[in-house]
Image (cartoon, rainbow, N blue to C red; front, side, top):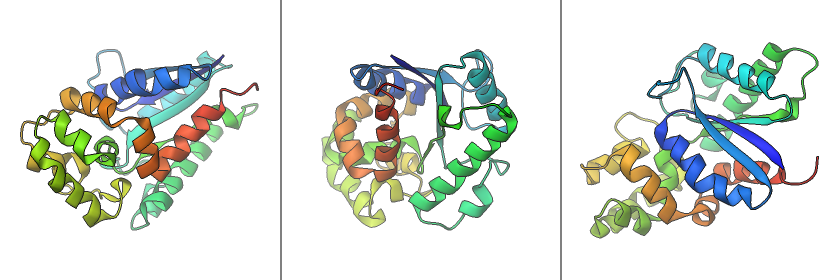
Length: 224
């Protein structure tokens, strides 16, 4: 069985990894565990990359036979993140790759030789966790207990072209779009519920960057 440690941004992402991703990957012989970045008791949230680098290298060194991946929102990343400056203005898929490739180079350099580069699988969520929930507007509307919002959520996807295209402007990022329509929305409460109802099949069909990451994780189930 392959063991994968996921360093995540906060409690919602940890719940998503533990309750949605882990059961599915477990069927493929992959033991996926999530850990929130920072010290025990930290409430989560985007941190300077210096802190993230420290946690990633610690995980890679502590478990030399495990893989390590990440799940951080592109929206709100601090300016010190690798590749962020070059990603500005690029389409979602290109922006994500720019940051992830720079993260990989940074961590490989920090780890030094010898280091098996394939053990680190960086992932940045475009542009925010809530984008995945727009993969199924009806399920999202039901999860926030407002079925009548389905057309409005569909309109957001139509406007942006795809869930991962819902951009990172402060007033237009995925979570703000939901909050504008469902003011009672609470990320840590409704987010995991909505993710369960949307399901991985619809997420990967609507979100190509997420689908590529999930595919890489699924590939770890094969014998090394």
